[in-house]
Amino acid sequence: MDAQILSERLSTDLGERKTTVLTCSCSIEYWGRSRSVIGCGDRIILFKPDSTVIVHSPRGFKPVNWMSSPTDTSADLEDGRTVVFSQRTVKPYEEMKITVDKVIEYTSLPGLRDEEKIDVTHTERDMRDYLEKHPREVHPDFRLKTVEHHITPGFIDLYGKIGDRYVVVELKAVKAGLPAVLQLKRYRDWLREKLRQPIHAILMAPGIAKNPHTLLKKEGMEFKKFNVHKLEIKKEKNTLEKWMN
Image (tube, rainbow, N blue to C red; front, side, top):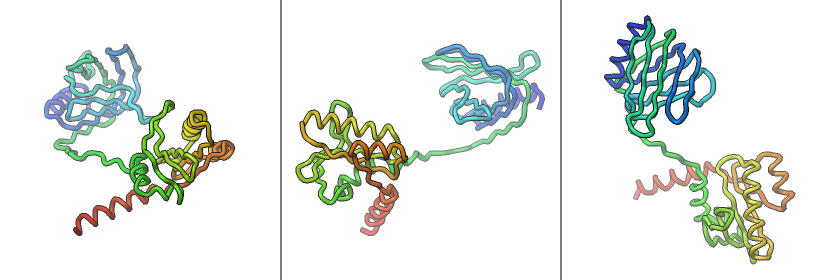
């Protein structure tokens, strides 16, 4: 596809708000929060119907540059090459210039729609809400006092007692690492100093890495495995019960 045809086709597709993917060799100039220049390389440029423009390189998941909606984006012919200009129409004002040297692939798709919103599940909040209703899964004798208990170092997910000893519970919805152990230790140490008594600390997660687990045990804290899939089972059961009633 030569530059003249590309400029005309891209102008038409941008005007019709089509989802367009241009794979090409190009260079990029940007003005706005900073000034940047990227030399010629193979890149994938995505033009969205809401006027967002995203430029990806063949590697990595982060874009090398982008212009978030709303933008005024156009394609013109300049010195025999297609040049794409994109400007944000609200603050912060930004500009991007893409100079296309070679077209590798061009695709435009009309009428793409997605009205759905992301339903995020299996989060720490889901765990907290579940354990608030089922505190015995923390420990058979665990008595919950508060959730999101605020202390100076942060918020304790679950705060309660086992017998006469205060308990802090830190929740992680993914495999726990060193930051989770250190966070729990900060909470435990702060409360121990404040209350002048031993504090039992429990980290609940689907799993824990080897070295953090070693540190956890060395500090006298406990790890308890939590199966996050039971959250989904519980939600499905509630949905079915509501439907049947």
